[in-house]
Length: 176
Ligand code: 2AM
Image (tube, rainbow, N blue to C red; front, side):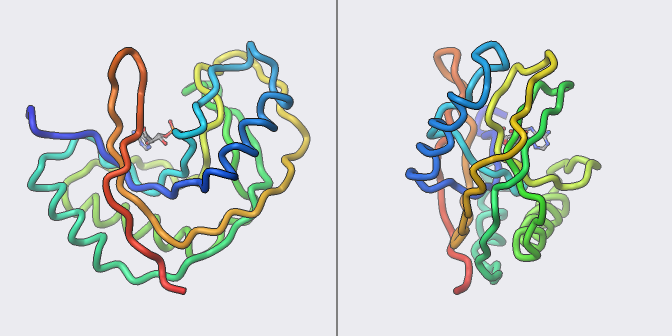
């Protein structure tokens, strides 16, 4: 499947918030805690699609373009560590209904289009550190940023020169 791409739907973080998060992260975690995700790669995944053919990608883009869902705000006030995948993440203690509905819609459209969906419940998170497989001292609190989502996006995960880069492909607005 040479013309397939590794795709996912996600919320982008505004540039200013990306910068605030990486500045705080440098203070909040020891360098040996894990490999920091570069600022431009910080995002919140809504639905992971895996390797998708060009035809299926087109169908999923069309479905995404028909979504009418409200925008929402959330406080980024939760932190956690998943040792098995080696991920330290930033999340929210109260996921807004709009976020859960949007993710559910995208995940069910993906499943119906034949993209395998994890059986694990959706746990909204922004990955901060990777390769964090040893115990990590998690700070007791975050600065409590508020993140407003007024659009969602399709990204391609590109692995080149030993690095993963997320290529922004298309964005759709959420209703006001
Ligand atoms: P992660 O940050 O927790 O690793 C691009 O790879 C994005 O899709 C990342 O946010 C990643 O989540 C997520 N992702 C990768 N593989 C996945 C899978 N099998 N199921 C769900 N999400 C996945």
